[in-house]
Length: 124
Image 1 (cartoon, rainbow, N blue to C red):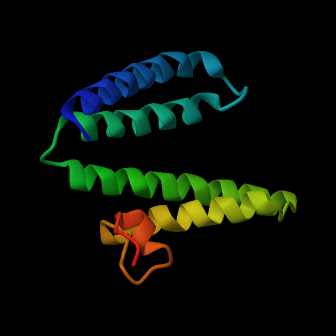
Image 2 (image 1 turned 180 degrees about the vertical axis):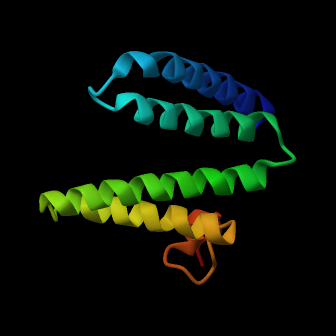
Image 3 (image 1 turned 90 degrees about the vertical axis):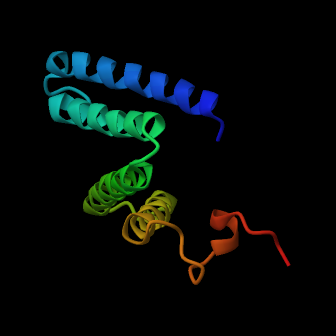
């Protein structure tokens, strides 16, 4: 990714983090609630750090993947609790497992399904 793209994404996520942190006290119990807004603000702040600081990007991306994995797992538990076992649950589990694998290994392993797609390797 070019440096200009990283700066643009960093500025956008920084603005989003500030906006969510500002809106959090006004949310109350409606919608996401205060904790949800602060959680999204923290997630966007981590993405901002990954855009601006190249040295710690590997660790920051693993933390981001862990956050995505945890959020998706909570969403999956919510769907299971409601008794909805449709395509949404499958989608949540596939994305959550991929994020978890990235958080643990720091990249998508070669032995995992669809490794060529996620690692950017050419087809045979």
